[in-house]
Length: 479
Length: 134
Image (cartoon, rainbow over all chains, first blue to last red):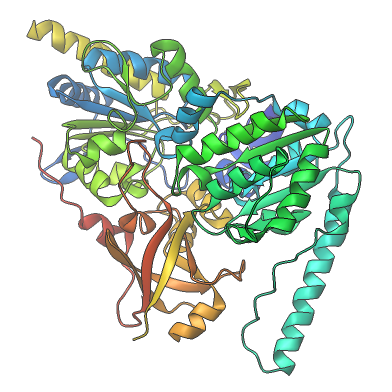
């Protein structure tokens, strides 16, 4: 039995680096420090995996040798005039580097999952700029934490524990004890409400009125957390104050805050369903903090306004820096989506949606982004790596992806691999093979290999390298 | 049958996150994504009980899901579906020139359909047209 320490977790953008994995006879028997998602990955990763490459023949996926599958994949890409190469956020930077070379070779479009995640945030950063820092700085110094349209309790479960409210920083103390008593209060209130409902024979609770005063904890000199969201998530329950914004009204609320911190008057009673007096009090707290941070999630990028919501959030942070110190950071989803953007930027000049069809890199999200290309039905082949667009793209885009010849490179069996024409089951990066990934704050960390992969499962970059060599051979023969 | 106009949200839940890491074909994943979380008052209005099938329709399509009582209520007329193959059948593919479709805050209509069944993953994939590529 071996205990491997300092393992990075290949799941979400928090990219925890303190995982301990217990390995016995090349099998992971236990995992420590991981959240529910991380533990599920380390302990169950091999339950639904593929082991042999597959090729579609007469409508059925049948087993094939690696060479045969590489040959077929290379032919699909070499024959295509406008192939798309999509995914990249759950693989290593090394694989993305080879992928970019392949995209250039075949004159295709290479796009990563940020296109349907924080793509609008990136577009907005081009326009406004971003004032940010590393998570370590925030762990030690931030005294006001905003989670806006983000639910780390579900999507980044250890974010609060490692970097914000429940982390023990050098200058800021953990608020864990306060949270426990707050939680006990919530449980007691829910019990009382249930009892009242039983006595009064109400089968559903009546909605509570919006609190028109900030709680006492917001006036204390300690680390504070405010959550702004369209529904009361678990993160919101853990917050000192929760602002429930009406769906698609984030832009109004952000702009209202901008006015208030510039000491301008709002001539309305409420904005986006929130009373103005509450906004004034929160704006005072923002201005009065020592170091504030606004973490924002895809609730801003996926709802109405998209990049304009981020424009408002980045501008709000910029404005706040006239009065105090404030930073902003997107809550990136996959463990290496930041790496996919970084590698793409240093290789091509652009972070995602890069089109090589003219022989040089072009970037115009809305035109060269994969959902738009698929919705317009312009692509004639696809390569998907470490991603599941069949499950996560809108129907028309998914339909146009699967009707074309499709190559899937993924260690797991997913709806996308089930619909592909060539499937490469690969080694799990961060478990069975090494690599590099970038945490959400752009800090690069190594992915560790803790167990040996099955012999038929090669690392992503090796499969890509073989396809690239074969494509070059085919093209030389064509010339 | 009563109908209700709602605003549709999709997003991550911890069960969906855990399920996807256990495998996209695992029971845990499939059970976590073929549901919609509703406000209890909305369920009462529609006469829907826990695990009753409901049809959620947008201008881009419709899908049958199991209704479950939201633990995050009250959020009247807001319905939440975890990310997954079912939710994405009815999402807005328009990106408004940004590359990003709309996955949150989509106008929709919900109605109880106790006699229609929730499609299995295979049935759902069978709806896609796959061309033969020799």
